Amino acid sequence: MPNHYRSFNRPGGNLGLAFREVCRSVLNLNTLTFVAANAPSEVASSFEVHQQRLASFSLQVASKMLVRQLSERRSRSFNGSLSRLFQSSTSKAKNAFLLVACTSGRLSLGVLRVLGPGIPQRLQLSVSASILKNVGNLLIDTEIASPPLSDNRSNGGGLYPGAVEKASIEGSDRSVVAEDISRALNISLPNDLSRLIFLATLRDNNSGHYYHPELARRFSGEVADQAMLVCHRRIYEQVVALAIEDLTDQLDVYIATVPVPRGRLIESWTKLKAYRATIPMDTDPISAEIFFMKVGVAVAILEARLPGRI
Image 1 (cartoon, helix red, strand yellow):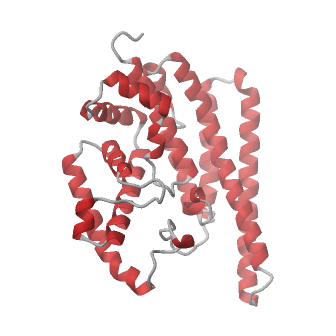
Image 2 (tube, one colour):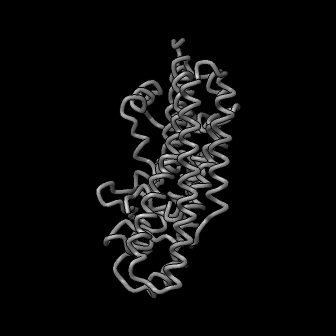
């Protein structure tokens, strides 16, 4: 399964929650008002367009996932017991219903875009949020259970080499180490964005594994690596949930701690967009777009605040 879709292993739950996050932290008037008041006019205008695109993109991701799951269930239905065939038919019916809902939502957003020039921006935002919220609620209400997700970074989608017993034994160690890492990060770094960036620097982007010399000495490499992954995912979710105003403040604090001239760092972030490499490798595409969108606007706001800028 592609990395972007691992956390969408079921048609309800995570997708529905992702839709709610889009409505809560992006498709709302407070966000639009803050951006309009603090960002350059061209950035504010671009943000309005991206708000609508994010709503359409979320529905597109859901549609692709549902189509893929319908195809998989169709191929599995040919060899199974009668009870499994019944369960498969029920699941397919639910997925088909959700797919119709997503398609209807996308068509509604398309109509809204066509009529956009004649509709006030605030009303467009409210309608888009309402469409996405209603579809998201359907996704959550019709959630279908699925096996828990595992760490799929290596060995063709499995855990590290070893039996399931080893994974269960190391699970408690991983949780303890993750809590220790979280406490250390909370003490040494000022905010969640700083902690997210720091954890990303400990990852080898070729293999996706994390390494810290002290943790490697104290624990096994596997436990330390998985514990850092747990922390990275947890902190990332907290950063994605930040209001754009709070994220801008956290970025401002982070910049103040870096021994690089503020203007130079902001220029680098604007041109290189290195923050795109700070997300966990199995991040879902919707939360990634939320993160990229918010950080991009935060960088533009701080750039506009530089001395000599208008």
